[in-house]
Amino acid sequence: MKNFNYNLIKMLHSKLDDLWRIEKFYLRDAKKSKSKSCEKLFKEMQKDLKKEVGLLRAEIARHLSHKKFD
Image: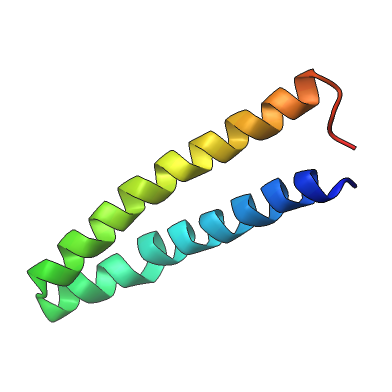
């Protein structure tokens, strides 16, 4: 696999892992602690990560469609 494709996959994996942790644990913990500022922070990060995941997926799809994913 070419290094630039590996980088895309690695970044996608990292972003998806962060997003999963925010949705599975961090938001729940912030709500339990009644920390509105933490809850707001994690919701904003969740929004940003979803956008970044979409950008990475689109770039990977572009590489696949141009047969540059090897």
